[in-house]
Image (tube, rainbow, N blue to C red):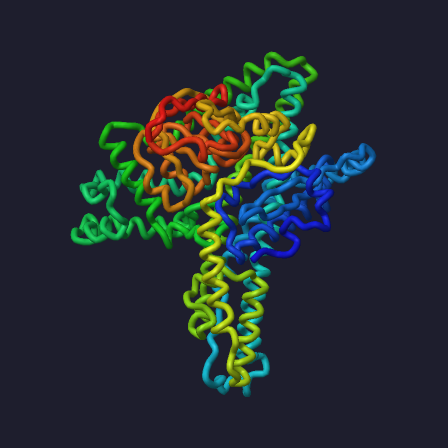
Length: 584
């Protein structure tokens, strides 16, 4: 089910048991289907290439992963030799400086490149296997037969995924690096400054990723202004809402406006995009419609639904100004330069997800479904979705046999071979999903140095030791990273799978493995967020700061310790979550 190199093995027991492996629940919260492993291999190939071989980030090389009961655990490969670190510093400074100095121009070229990948995967043709080839195969020397076309189309689809992941990480490490350098400067000169305040100084920046929710807020106002808001009732499906709207001219007009908004803003995914079942809003509109209902109800109640951007910017500028005044004169200019650089590169940290993880990947998964349909039409699979129960190389093998037997007229083994494998794996994944993985296994490191591990996942030296101590299943307080300030109490809503997002109700506190920027539309409903994993620059932390709501990230075990309906207190300033009652 998984690649041979992805599992713990006796041959490398000694070295693996001495390493620290933490569950990457941010990206892989549930057991991994066999095909979806490409969204482990390719990203880690790409991030390692950029981090270790291109930019030579001084303290860290790349990321290794292992599969435990279907869940993905990762471990960073540190650079510990001082001479090697010094060697890499020269590479990093020279190469990173080129990007920082030409950021705007390079970023525009990057967007053009990624849009071309999106267009190619969208337009890529998945051929069928005809009874007879058309005459053009004889008369046109450039035409290939169907067996070549099928295999080339599949191989190109896989390669497009690799190319996207290569692009995905080109700028991302530098975005984190700029912020990390700014944070280091602050801590070196302001020893008592909280991590949260450093993060707040780069908040309040409008990024592309918030545009879809802004369009939903506009559509909510339009629904009220045109008198069609009565169709948006809690619990109604998108189909039921659209059926009522289609019965009036005003409703039809609203639906026409919705269609204009969909391109490109409904190319959001229902999750982080790394699993095949994270469809786009175009495929599964439950999230945007749940958001529309929430926005309309809030507006009718006289509540503010806009992101408090101006308030966040005022607080950002206040903090920056007051901390700057505490610095020595020699530290002020570097502070200004590093803060300016962080604010310049910060939008990419969020925007790349819209292009790569959402727009591209939802199109890519759908293209792979077309190959599933080809296999299902020829009885190699019972259902097109079963393609994702096979590894990518297994799919290649199935396609090889399919075109072989199509070409020769022979009897294929595939129809009796692959369906039982897919059925068994689906059953296994369902059973594995009932297991609660520990936040980490192995030997806790004395110090965590990988900037990406710290910034994105929130796996700091302190957090590792807290996880080691916090094993009491009856504890009533969880400790995490203070990601966004404020204190609130309310009922918890535990969300473990993407299809539970629509269950979130007004005034609840979201408890999840990690939030995705794609969930931004439900932030008008919730009062706070608590996550199992994540650092101050994780997507959950960023989104909560931009919406001005308390958040505690990186608790390690919130989803396993808190139940839906329990009253909890979230202190986003201190980084604590208190369970106030035992009811559910």
